[in-house]
Length: 281
Image (cartoon, rainbow, N blue to C red):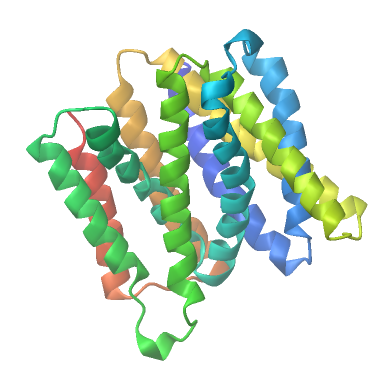
């Protein structure tokens, strides 16, 4: 068996497990800010050990602003992810995160000169319709603005992060080196924030963060290894990852936490899967 067929489900499992852990963190009173700090510390170490980045390919002065943007956005959107899981649930959060790839696709037309095709425009249109259906919430369900605002922030945030990584890659910065730089900067900024806020440090919060970091980096590492093991089948990796996360996230939300979806939300999930399917060659 090709090892890529093992790395793919492992990556899907890590992605959904991350959302489950964030949901449980709030229930057990974990300070997510401290957990996020520990997450980036461990992710930086694992990145050095497993990806072995070429530090010489780190971006220089002209691209430091892009790297700084990543350093600020990564912990900010991680906290938004935790809020989205708390207020909107795992199903909508995972779907919103996966649909963020269409922001990067739109940016490819504007920033990178990628040709516009009917198929890509159709995928973007389906993704927008899916996002509307997923975030639409009947008034009787309550939940307020947070139930749709946080998934929207997650969608936009992860889309911008993807674009920034692409900007670094196009400028010659190695992915592993850029990832390490972003992790270290994100962790440093999070540490400064916690010191400024005079956080009450607790070992349990940092321990929870190490588990988050293991799962978070596991998601990235197994996804990279899946692409490396299946170099001639990028569409398979792309579709399996995104559809797998939406499907498993839906199952996890319903079975573990009793999350309920309206008929319109269900249509949104179907449209999200359709948007991804449209992108297949």
